[in-house]
Image (cartoon, rainbow, N blue to C red; front, side, top):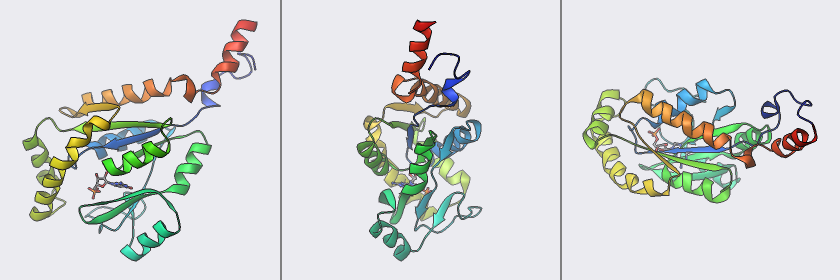
Length: 217
Ligand code: 5GP
């Protein structure tokens, strides 16, 4: 291949990455994730399966695939999940097939999953995984955001905050940590992480041929 064979080789041959976004609920991980997927055509959002009932405004196949416990357990038994975990008494898991298809097509995949799921994916695909942890600027801010979104009852919010205190301990396992004080700044940080990770040589299999073409010119 010479440099002229592909005018934009970076658009033709790429190795997708797995962007694993974790945080305690309410820290803004979901908003950051959805924005990145909306802005970057090469990034696909992994839609999880869950036994949690839909919240007001959530749609089947958009936020989650909502399953009964029996249906979820059947997916586990059939080996259809890349990872799964129990969070707050509900099961959550990542369907394997769409992730594999995206990787084969050279797309990047974003996972909005808890630290247990992120650890499982990173262990299975260490070279392809990038782990990002989102922290709230303060604990009172996190509590305020959970109350403000008014999607959960008071006892559920209290349970989530208690869980969040334990989850937050896992920040050390991340490759990158973003403190979400201001959404626009946090989003700019996330873009920096994504774009830098995309420029790693191993994610750009077109590079050797491209460089060879340069030296042969
Ligand atoms: P929520 O009920 O607020 O939508 O999600 C609760 C937690 O479960 C969040 O931390 C969310 O990221 C996580 N979660 C969502 N989908 C998955 C998944 O497929 N696997 C794992 N391990 N966690 C998930």
